[in-house]
Length: 199
Image 1 (cartoon, rainbow, N blue to C red):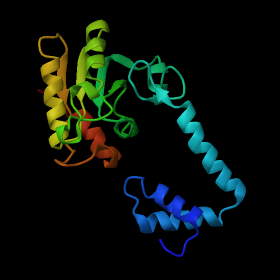
Image 2 (spheres, rainbow, N blue to C red; image 1 turned 120 degrees about the vertical axis):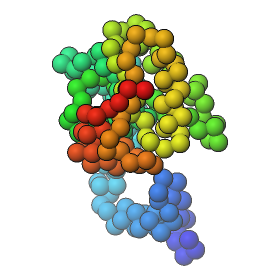
Image 3 (cartoon, rainbow, N blue to C red; image 1 turned 90 degrees about the vertical axis):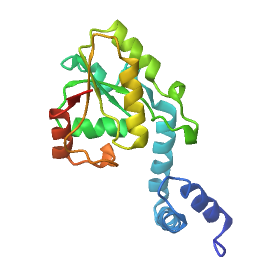
Image 4 (tube, rainbow, N blue to C red; image 1 turned 135 degrees about the vertical axis):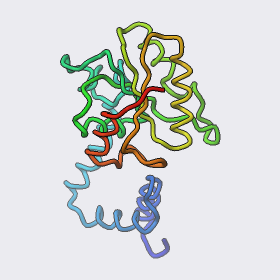
């Protein structure tokens, strides 16, 4: 990054910390910000700070929200007897965009990954068990990604809910092994929900 003034070098360094952003892309973004008007740059900075200050976890499903409840949990028309368990808010959005699910959600905020130091205590599993015990839940749909970590997490959830009266199903048809839910198209996600299978 030699040749760039110190503030630009710092901006490039900070932008390159984002996932999937290498030094070249960070440099392009930094130059774009540099060419933008002061008002545009100010709006970008304000929106970043607003997200950091206002966004929190929904008190029911742990989705991201700016209030106590997320939009899904605040919707009285949703079937709270069916809970779809997802890894992260992006996966929740992918299921929602399929327009094939009208139940509730539970966001784990990760998957089992011992190599990264993520164990059961780092996920919202205890909270899921509490919801199943206290609410009138009929079915839990496990919608973790079909990769090693997602499958390990799904198995743990199945064990966690063994002995309860809740039906446990797993999304199936349409989601390829090794795929990522947030990149699935609407039809693929709709079929995966429609043809879920028992465990």
